[in-house]
Image: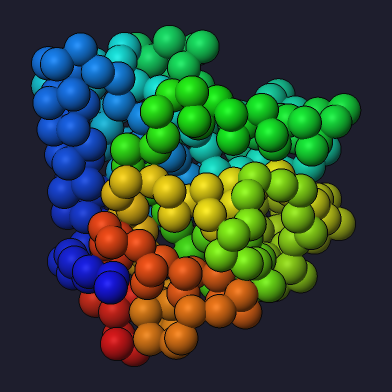
Length: 246
Ligand code: GLP
């Protein structure tokens, strides 16, 4: 069962989720525990990251006890490539916070042995005690992370082939479709579903139809976001445009 939370605008959604994250960090750090966050890229979480940076700067929220795992990375792109998700995360979040570099985990797009990199990534999540809170966006193909259709409920972190719809959607960031990688490394559906809490964010009319499918179609590999219906603590944070087809 997916819960929905309607927000008047992106900023209000960002503030609500950032507050939830800050509260979680505060509660856990009081009892000496770290907080494990699963993070997403794309344009959707940008207002959330801006708000987390504001809370750090203006409200003294510390990220020293936070451990992060990003959902995915393009194959072939390294940390200095402006379109790599490592670069995106450094620019839009990490370099503005006090999170220790050793606590940041992102699949390695340049790994010589991608299967080993994916297995090590899964092991690092387990060693950290599992993900407490996972942030998700949603792609128009129904992908979460880069789990394109078809993606099974028991899929783990692995190498995937990107859907042409996704390559075209993301080509706006690359300027040219030919520059968009064909492959990626992504957390699997099962990896995502193991997070204790999931907050999916979707804004704008372009997401309305896929939000409807994710919430209302029977769970199946052909729309990977439908697997979220099987999670006991998943909330969709929507603006009115993204909720239009519900
Ligand atoms: C990208 C990412 C996803 C993201 C989605 C939506 O390709 N791999 O994690 O949720 O596509 O992106 P946007 O937020 O820009 O719409």
